Amino acid sequence: MQTLSAIRNIRPKPQSTTRCAGRTKGQSQISPGTPSTDGFLNHTFIPVCEPAKRLPEQSETEIGFFRSASHLAKLHNLTLSDVSGYAYPYNILLAHREIRTKLNRQPYETELLITKTGNDKQVALATEQVYEVGNQLYYIPVIPLYRFLRKKENRRCGALLLAVMSYLYREAGVPYYRDEGWFMYDEYDMNKECFLECLRENPDDYEEDISDILRNDVCGDIMQRKLFNPYHLKHLDDNIARFKPANPFQEECHLIAQDTLQLFRDFSKNSIFQNIAPPDEDDDNDDIPTPETYIAFIGDGKGWVYENIERSVNDYLGNYSQMALPSRTQVFDGTDNEVKNLEFEYRLFEIIENLCNILFDLP
Image (cartoon, rainbow, N blue to C red):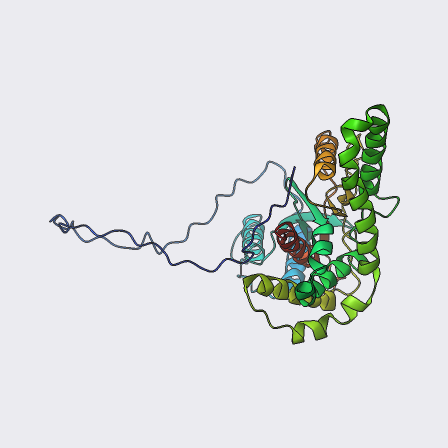
């Protein structure tokens, strides 16, 4: 696992494409070959269908599949080709292939499944989205902003970042390391106990490091009170309107505040834990890491306390082959009137990643 690194340019400006160098002596004189038809380039190949030895009953399968496909296409605003001229099960193969292709032209990767629903076991289509976090630790340090806000010239820009963090804490439910009962609270508590034990045994060797412990505790409590205050999020709209960025850094802060405000308006009651997939029933180990292990507010993003905790978390997560990830499945059986996806999670994690890049880059 690695913590999100500090990348100053969140949205880098497009660069001009490098041109290939021309040939200085001109092209070789090669006689053209005989003209050929371009029909091959204009032909679309369709997949090979090799039917299984035993197929589902044709009538029921076709009725259920195409009814579900019609409902899916309506909700996703897709136009599907007419495959009625193809024999079963080739017509279903072609329709499934087209829907899957068009679904994945949208911003979020989607898996298309064929399933059976209800007691009548009707054939239907289903979509599944999973947000893969990879090997990233989405840890949001609060002490860099604490230091940043102490300078008067930074307060207007810092107020935007404070509102973003307040949204993540109050509304999105990102765990805070000073709140008891959360994974990160236990990590800091265990680290402190180990430190105090070493301090009692060798006080001269660890006396200088106690300042790091105190800074994470004291500054963390101060920042928690700020984040919990609804004032910052309540006045975010006005602060965005009044703020005039004067440099690229302030533009980044202004942009992430706008993204956060729009996410709050679009998903006012959503939280980070709302679409967490339960453990697989076939998995003997039900104790898999939940998102609180890889997404949380932390104290500082540097120092020996942070390094110890990051090492401890990596050791812990290294014992598991999987983690609980945000996921969402929707069965198109005609009962839903809106698309269910992970748009909230995709936008939320992008905000968190951009925020971490800003915070880790603060002096």
